[in-house]
Image (cartoon, rainbow, N blue to C red):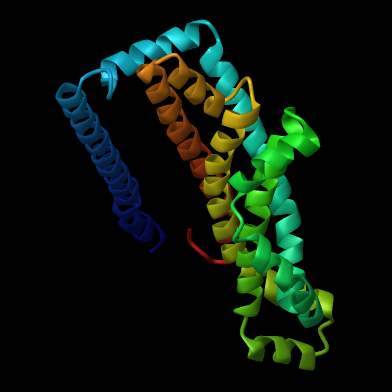
Length: 272
């Protein structure tokens, strides 16, 4: 029986990796086709409007090599990436506990709600001038603007996740003698993790919007500064390099965040 069972399981065991490999290859093929179609459309636009308006893929690649050789591109990526990660990370660290408090404790929600509802409708771009005046043109002003961008998004998503927890689960846990801390760790937090991840991803995307505006106004190094400087010099190919690099950097950051988040969510039986 044991030998037969082992023999029967062998084909199934072999099929699963083959099926997974086929799916991965198919996904890779679709991604590759999508990129090639995009590059083709880009080339057609460049041919239609000319290099003064739309830099072609070849011109953009040559400009990227030029900026990479003198270190401008690497320095810009490092500067912008560091500012985004610090500001976004602080926003998540503050937004999650505040969101948990807002969602769980009514008096805290009533006290903070006017400020959250007021400031979340004011875009970070509106505070760029004040941030420079108050904090200078150093790193602090950019980090604070990104923090401002992230913290409200994370807070709102976290509090929404807390308030979406079934009331019957909370009452059942309380009737069984669970403390507030046990309810938070055993029921509220596991149910809220998907909302926290969603808020973190949305905050990451908005952080990229903010960093460009902040660096255009008050930065010597960064992708936003690179785009603005390129405009002043009339180098449309450098502008395309800055824009595409922003997209690639955001794609990488989001992928890494999804991989890390999927491992956390897997513990709670949730797929991202």
